[in-house]
Image 1: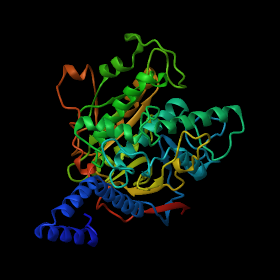
Image 2: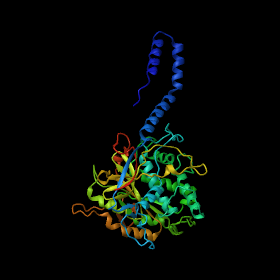
Image 3: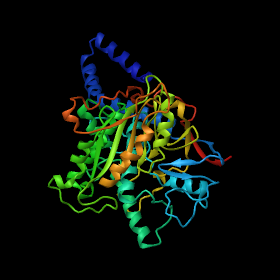
Length: 454
C-alpha cells in the first residue's frame, strides 16, 4: 500500500554495490543496522496508515439533516411529534407536545456516542494506536451495550445536559454517567472491561487480530463474553447478563437459566434501578439476516416497528462496508449514530474529564432500503415480568405483512438450545458488513449534520 521512500531504495543499491566489490565489513554493519530497524519500518507504516485515516475520518463537512414536521420521529421507544397532543400530566412514555423535536434533540444527544479514537495505548500484539479504518463495528457494538447499561443503571428516561449538576440527584446521575463511559475507556485496564483493547483481545480466540473487521453477529458474542468477564470482578454486573440468540431463535429456558438467580448461588444485592434480587436484568442480542445480497424490503416495516418498543436498545449493522448504530426512524429513514469520526483519545480517569466527545449533536439519516441484510437487534428487559411482557408485545412485529414472506425475523422457542441443536457460535453469516470502512460509500460518511425541520 505504501512505497518505500527513494532514499531507502538508494541505500539498498549502495549496499548491493559494496557487497559485490568485497566491502563486507561495511555491508555487515549496515545489515545489522537494518535488522535492528526492522520493527521500526513496521511502525513507520502503521504511523503512515494512522495519518491517512486521521485525514480521512478526522474532518467534517457541514450538511443538514431534514426532519419533517408532518411525521413522528421515533427514538428507542419514544415518539416525538410537533403536532402530537398528549396530556402533560399523564405518565406516557411518549414525547409530549411541549417537547416536540426539541425533546427528540435532547434524547438523541443523551445517547452515548463512541467513535474512532487515535493515540490510545498500543493494542496487544500490534502497532495500532488507533482503530480508524477497521473498528467501526466494534464501536457500534460498544454503543449498543452502552445504551443497555444506561437503561440498566439510569433508566430509559435519563437525559444528559452539558452543565454542572445542580442537585444531589443530578450529581449522582453524573457520577453514574461517567462510570459507564469509563467502562469503555480506550485503554487495556481491567477497569475498562468494554474497551476496544478488551474486545480485540477477546476476538483473538476466534482467530481475529487488531486491524481485522467484524460482523454484527461476531461482535454480539464478544459483548456477551466481555460482560461475563466483567461480572467476575465487578459486583455491578452480577445482576446483568447478555444472551445471544442462535440462528434467529431465542430459547426461553436458556433465558430463565441465565436470569433466575434463585436457581444459582448468586444471592447478591444489586445497585441497579431496574432489576430484582431474584432475577438478573437481561440484554438480549438477536443477530439476523434479512435477505441475501440486499435486505428484503418486506422486513423494513418489521425493523422500524421494533424501534418503537421501549425494550429496544438499538440495531447494529449499517450499509455495505459501513457499520452504523441505529436508534430510531422517521418515515422510511433510519436515524443513526456514526462511529466514523476520528477523535483524540480522552483520559477518562482524570477527574471531571470532558464529556462532549461522547455525545453526538448531529443526528443522521439513512434510507431503509440501503441497510445491509446482516444486523443485530438489541433489547433490554429488567425483570421477569418485563421479559414475558416483551415476548408478548414483540410477536406481532416479527412476521412481515407480505403474502409471499411468511418467515419471522426471529422466534421464541420453548426449552434449551443444547437440547435442540449443536451449532457453532457464529452461525449467522455477516461477512458483508465485516469488511467495513475501506473503499466504502463516501457520500455521507464525512459530514457532520445539523438539525433542520422542514
